[in-house]
Image (cartoon, rainbow over all chains, first blue to last red):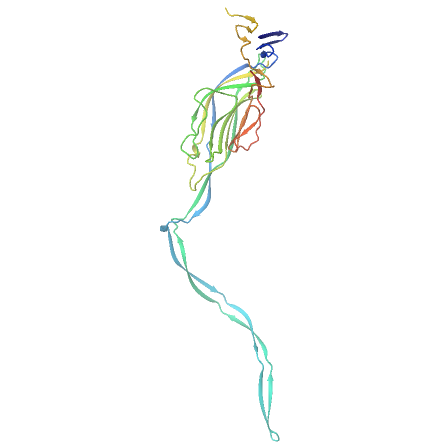
Length: 285
Length: 79
């Protein structure tokens, strides 16, 4: 069963069994339609090279026996002179004295002399001591500084106008509710993964592809699978312009080994060339 | 000669079939839509990660993304 209804300013068509008819067309609802198209050729997208930083990690004193030696190292130490104070106790003494008298003859007496403490300052002259040490000597040819490397984090974005929205006969911009983008394109410069001599995988197919909003173009991950680099582009309406934004986001990435730079960081630049056919759509005029 | 207008109990055809009740025309419908049209930018990158905003407006992050991008839901479409 189908139904057709026509009223002032409205056409409505239904279809389906009686009682469960569905609306298949209704001019009162937003019926999408295309209000204009634009063919935009040779749109370039350019993602920059990556950069890296070298950082000092440690000094390698070598472990090779050919570069290690041992020798006696003679050391002279001088102990400076020193004054110090000392004391000692002198014990008391008994002395016997004898006296002669004509009348008394010899008489004896004992005389005690008290003990006392004696203080004095002592000078100790300086002196030299001679010693020798058995030391390890590292050959200069073998000693080297060791460095680590990391990819620099980077956030970059570039937005360009690629078209002007369609206008009506009076030259006024037609409001646009949605766009559908058909794209054909190719990568014109194959950026490399900074670690490997191989191009980053690109999601751009060789055929025409359609999208709304944004597209992931390239990415790369760490050993654990987490992303460290993303490259996307977005096509969208802003004001009376159709714009394209290309974005690159790079997280810092440390090298797993010392003294090993990222050999292809300076070859990570990728470029694309796109042709767009853009359909500008509205739901209701 | 092409049929300009045909009305039967089970089918409506107008303008040589350009308007046909058995054709599933899409139309804007926010209630119980069958699909959604994305109407703007729906991805962002930050910190080496990616945020994808699905047509319902839900953020889908990759676990690395550290930005604050947001996008609205797409426009509901009924088929």
